[in-house]
Image (cartoon, rainbow, N blue to C red; front, side):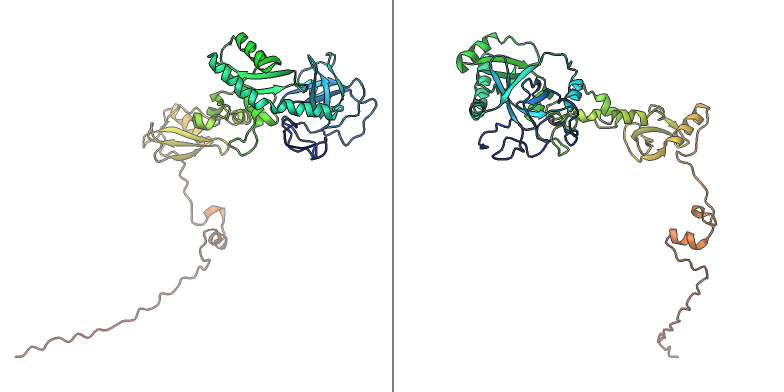
Length: 382
């Protein structure tokens, strides 16, 4: 098989000249088959996960008992006709995938017909080659009809009789006239499928600001709403350009460490409380959560001359202020005696830490040389 057309549909690790993947982690939303090294016990599980273009996956039943492994290209049942896909997972681990996607095992699954023949793959490749031009022409037609929608992707069925148009729209769109024009122009069955901005980013893929491939195209399947509350709890600046991902929405990774930040801040004092000192009132400016340090300034509207204070010290100052006691300083001043510097009584140990010589003998001052300067005074004649 040649790789002139991306018939792998999102898999870039296919061995040239073979229909099998060179690795077992080859597709978007990949799943590592950690049970592959163990022998099958009893009858093999007959439900197989099949991957199509980009992130679309479905489950099919292997009614004919075909020996399949990850990376095999198969012909499966579709409505109407048949579709071509790649095996992404098989065996007992598929049962865990069904539970993850909340699919009942008693569901009437579509069937796997056979392993794809060369004629099936050639038809599949020729249909996939039509997708870029079809998407561009579909966008032009939607623009001419003045529809408030964006067509993000087009996926042809393996037999070339049907195409799925993925679109994004903020409001409900009446695309009945659009479907008529598509059917007349492309001579195929049309299916319109609405997706969100995050799903579009997952289908297209890309590299995030972290330098890694987008999470929505590699492992995220359920998108949880992200709000600015997550950024506020993590002491992040509310800059839309930095907080937004490639989809234009808030980054999904803002939720990853949100729970740990909430747990770490449970015993933190109220930041709206101003600390009263004899110098003046100190206002909270920022917090280092994991170092448990809060920064205060005597200017309410500007972060000038910041002072770092530990959480315990802030609690004690607040308790004293509530009792009407005004503290002298924000930080405690501890008097240190010369013999107890840093908790060491040995002078040699203290000198090592302070990088000073340990010699306790008084050094004698070298006598300074006296330099006599003879100045010839002028003689006074009598």
